[in-house]
Image (tube, rainbow, N blue to C red; front, side, top):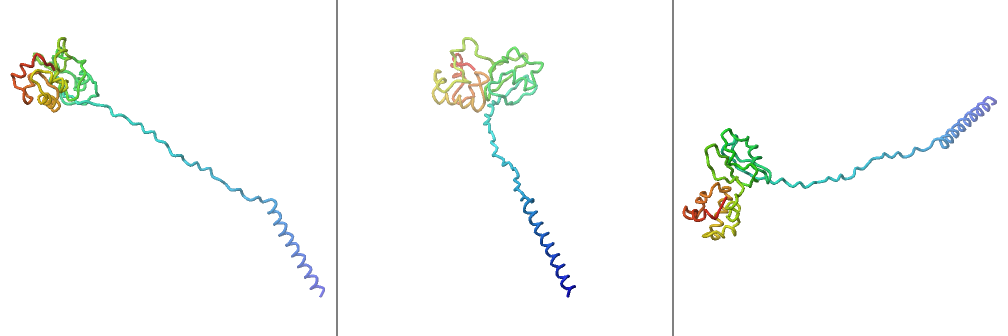
Length: 199
């Protein structure tokens, strides 16, 4: 019986020690183990990027046809208000037989204009030239409005519109004689107008 009693006491003692040990563990966790703080990831929310849309105004261009004594005749696109020397450069420059004394390289070009660079020995009525002195009172059939054209003797609304339609479709007049190609204009009519018009 003594052995049984002693064994029981030993078991109780061991149980008490284990209980105290467990309690101690629990107290230690309670006192010293801090709960983990929530970890916040700093995620930068991208703001909506403002795209600056620059409304680019397309550069205005003109189409000009150049023929004659240039290395690369043809139709070229140029910026508005381009000068004839710029067109000649784009066309490869003048040929060796070009008669450049008849050409005003400083003139401002117009859309749908036809430019002819004469060769040596050729005489061409130039649409390339600025109006000469004494032409201020003449009507320029390449630039005149319908109202201005109707100030000419024998030119009514119909014939004025015919001139405008012709130059719109074919470009500026190369010579005054070319006016005979317009509907309603014969050689006699052109001769009557010759002293009143210019190109």
